[in-house]
Image (cartoon, rainbow, N blue to C red):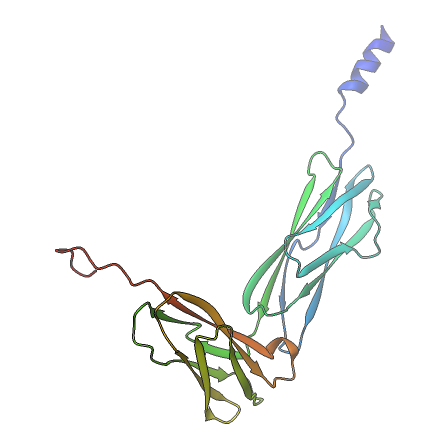
Length: 230
């Protein structure tokens, strides 16, 4: 009888606790103009009284790589480790958040979510980012203003349209600092969607190309009679 009670007690006991505890699951980083990639480390400790096995480390963007620092995937109670991440800056600008999900064999908390908040400076101020014509509108030039931010001069070397229906020209307003790109359709008789590839002499590869979009789109429908402000 005593053996039966002991067996029942063992069967009813909760499973041994385990898990990963991250010191800073949310981290911030500021990218410099010259950075092509930045790395961030998320340190963790194994809590509880049994080993933890990392089953998967997922990112949700090809611009982010993540793994344990040494490729190790199983950790003992009390052991520490690091999830090492690398973010490829590419053409991103502004404020971004990138997430990494770490999946383990811990039944109580199988997933840990890590967040990297990134601030990426821009080298150019481009306005507007898109030029729009309506079908049948006069085929006149529309312009994009590009200002170079920061201290160093950057020369715009070319503005190459992706469609033959568009022609471009570059006007220097202030040497190395401000430019105007005129985009002129040869016709607006049909819808067209495309871009202008702006090429610069920036010494930083990720700033050597910028994109400006153009669109010849359907006319807006006329406002119904008696409806003001449309």
